[in-house]
Image 1 (cartoon, rainbow, N blue to C red):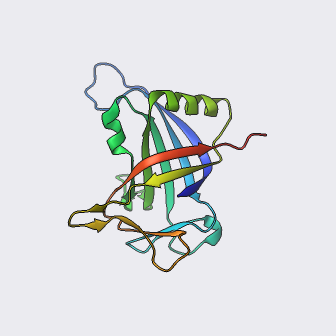
Image 2: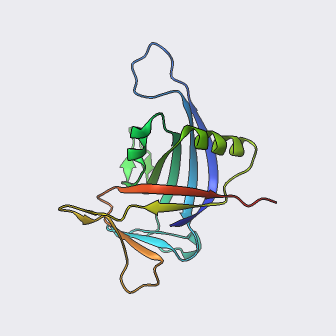
Length: 172
């Protein structure tokens, strides 16, 4: 799926020594993304992930979060998942969204991070999904029948593995 990068932000987590936590100190990148052109994903719950210029009342947004992988086990967590609507203790409400989580090899992450620090931002990206059928659940993600190949149907009760990500830059 081809995605347009709308915005990029950088986060630094600094874990204070002496406290029990599963978090690690380090950087992560967050990108607000949306499908390019006519590509879209129709979710089981009725929402549409599509280009905002094709706005309908059921649009859903998405964020790509990128981390460095510390070993090969991290790549198993590269996935697209559905985050349902939530309320917080302070009364805030968070709309449902799609979350793309991707761990990159250390060198690739550092190169992407250095590009962003140098104001060389990715303009778009391509994500290759795993279309395997899962026993007892069927396919989590499939092409919509009868279309032009631009639409996908997602059973968003199931995460979808990300197999590959390619970043594109427009240099001037």
